[in-house]
Length: 157
Image (cartoon, rainbow, N blue to C red; front, side, top):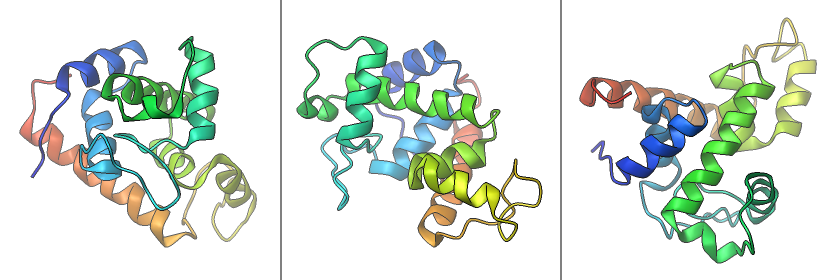
């Protein structure tokens, strides 16, 4: 129910970007159920469900030469791109996991709007509510999965 395929890749890439590997595993579980060829109805691809646009931008930043969208189905590439991207979102949102996950799922533009809206944020820095049910559910599922992974893999850090 909480498998950990691609453990070596996850641990390596998580360490590279100072991420908890169990957080990355939880994201992959919720994004694709560890299916490397997964594709969403919004055309997000691979284990960490990256869009072509985001993947191309991140690939340039981390120096992947001759990037093609088919590379999103390669676990090593997809996890590297996804780890860099979530790490950059965590940096953007002062390591607030809820905000970073919401941005990963719904886009940074939406999170920016929500933070300015008093219905969703009292202080402009944290969210009291997420108006997109899909995003709200996603954030909760990743956080729940992370807790399960911590229980099941206590020695993996």
